[in-house]
Image (cartoon, rainbow, N blue to C red):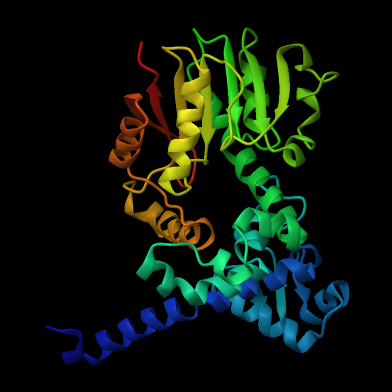
Length: 349
């Protein structure tokens, strides 16, 4: 029986579609709560909306509507009419949450995104980023020059994502016969710090843009815990990779347009010795369906801002082949969401 022949089934489909259509409003409600400090104002014990509003310095009436909308999405819990407390999901939005997810929420809803998403049809039609057309410059130049708040949110979000996965990734990276590692575009060095802590024989290099490595975790600095086994090098991997190592790590980096990814791989190959390995740490687009609900949308997000994409396993293999690398294997990293994969290749010779 088709849905239109069953009124109740048809209405269920209508409801599901309407829920998808108001997704931007759900995202905006999350971002508003974070920006207003609502997760800090709500406690684990029930509080009346008026008390929460006083702590958050907002109007009780409109705050009640915001909390009602979020509670219907499973964020916060209304224990009795007008009384709310945290649940497991809303607690992740607090400042003291160990995962820092509030920064990811703010980043994914940064002001520029509200200009870009309505032009997704153009990006799909032409296969190009729309952010450069909107702001007259490439995405990263726009962030650093014109949107410092978004740039800070981006850095904090990437730090939060890295802190969520670094320990699990480090457990699954085999460095038994590796003496030197460089983390390319490694941000503030959370993954490298974890690897050095677990492998006392390994020497590491953090390589990223000057403004990024300036905020590297203290343990990697000259006076830090791993200062005798680590160097911090500023540079742009799209221009060169001036560091020799036995293993080159690229975590969440090859999501650019393929010409940029190939440029990075070729820069590595120009510097590295034959036999050196490259380890890509990223999500793959042919993972389990439940995870694809997130990664498939992030894939479109990458299209909008840099014209990039997430890859399937076979697409990674083809990318390595174009760069002249020998593809070796792909391994899933348990305990990460969306599940990260270790995609390995080596320089022939």
